[in-house]
Image 1 (cartoon, one colour):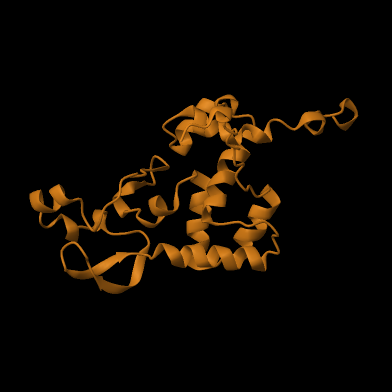
Image 2: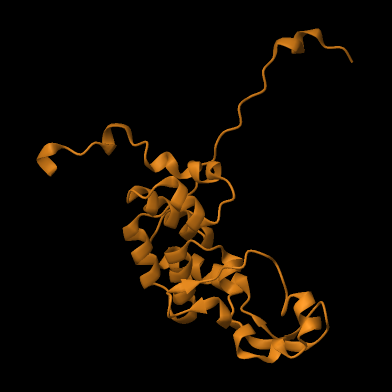
Length: 197
């Protein structure tokens, strides 16, 4: 149908969704309300900026204590990457490939049908964080991913350059990290009075 009056209309600009970010104090309160393995996992997510699945699928071989590094594998997978399990059939039984955060019970691998231990179920951590947020009295809608948002935001607030933060976050494009620059645009509230110094 020809609608001549629509020719002059302009599409509405998509709004940029600003992520929920916890203050440093709120992060400390949340972490204080978590126990055991979930406390460790939440600390890793906030301290490194890794994503939920990157955290739950960490393997022993991914942690290098001597160099203080964690290798984050940003690819989906099951017990062993398929080609490796064929090339090295015994690799799945070696210590390095074991999960750092294993599930408490054995389960059937949907790919192979083998009965073995998989990594911890990600919804368990999500549930623990949701309960921790409530227990800490945080009014914001905070999730596991909020810890990642807080990691990026707190680095930018501390003065780290956006390129470094982008690399640490694993963003493929700096424009993704630019979303977090809302913390730098504080207007008059960002100015420090000489008297305060």
